[in-house]
Image (cartoon, rainbow, N blue to C red; front, side, top):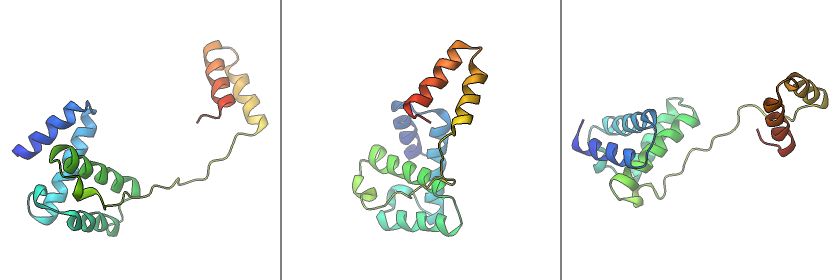
Length: 134
């Protein structure tokens, strides 16, 4: 691992991010650097935009591109202190794949009936339903 990636790893640890998130962020930044054949600290906003467009042309899902964006944003802002690089790079918009619909009255009754024998579960489900949480 390069000294730059060690510096990013330390910044990720300071933020107390999960080990899988740290590994994903490091992988994303390394892939961006490999795509251009140079260290990612030498790239600018135009290269980052081009890389994210490249991912879109490869058919990567918006959620995947959002992870790359978050990793690069962390790298440039937190690790390098260069917020100007990511200032004009838009985050991919993530849309829900299926429209959400509320439960019908019979579905609610069936759910509560199924949880009736377990008071804690019943209370949690009833609270979720009453407050509209998902």
